[in-house]
Image (cartoon, rainbow over all chains, first blue to last red; front, side, top):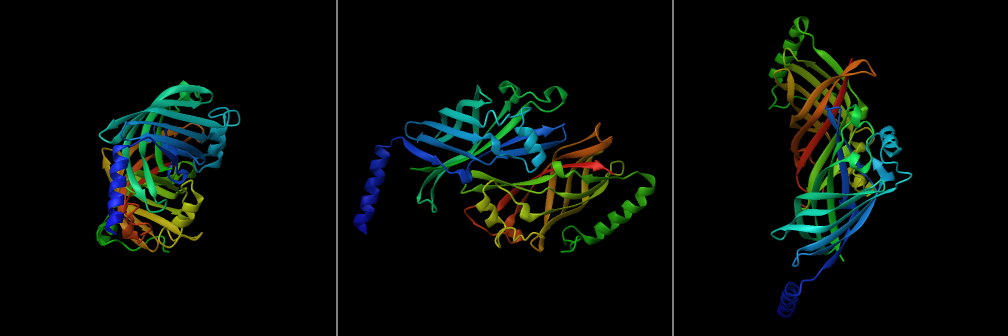
Length: 189
Length: 199
């Protein structure tokens, strides 16, 4: 037992001393993007994308990282099928022509040992624009389910959809500002 | 389940009866307006922290029901419900677990109710509502605070539409929902989107 503990302690020390970049695979059951748009100044319409995948490279010692997430825009889900259909149409996402949205974040800003910001680009409808996601939660834990380390958090940003050429209704009172809420958990590989 | 669950001791049955009478008396002088929820813009969302790390979100609804507001007298009444088997997180396996006995315990007829006759106003603006949330055959006090509230004239329907966003918090264990405690937090943020069309 003592030998085992010593081995674990040594291994922990060794990994701390030689910490290196680790690859994390996005857990799609705890990863998602929710968008919020205020509807005629009255109430907030929320939607999400049910299909997404991605990976995260993360080096806590070097304070670097890279996240790459692909969203299937055809999987849009607001709870109202007629609205999903309109949002998928050429008025908005034009999902048949542009079936994916792609976020690449290659600059991780740290506050202590926690990620506070991810700076990157969002490609939507064939256009790539800079986006900065701000963390409202960030944490790593040992998952009893995966028996591995899981890191993740909540991130958010507000974008102007017209920057990606999605301008339907902006002149008639539909909001240009869209709040994006991103939940991410990724399992160490 | 009865559409009008028993009064919570904390909300005060006497106070409810008094305000109901006041509503009846007041209706002659002022004009309370009644509205029916628009199912396209009336959903309930919940947020709960997973392993202290990231926020799990889900949706319930659409919500059905009616709201009566007397802006002049600054009072009103809310009676709304939704089917809990509508729970949707974008992960079908999780939805099944959430419908289970430690979650919403839903069958296709399982309904959650929110009843309030305790509406708060600032001027003629609705600020919040304090009422009783019932689900799984039990109930808890839920205080909803308006993040925004507005009314507009809808050109298409030629009707007034009022609505807003409301937030509240509850402890799910108070309602017997103990699934995955303590790995998934007990504290749940409740976010209500509602738009209602004047009758």
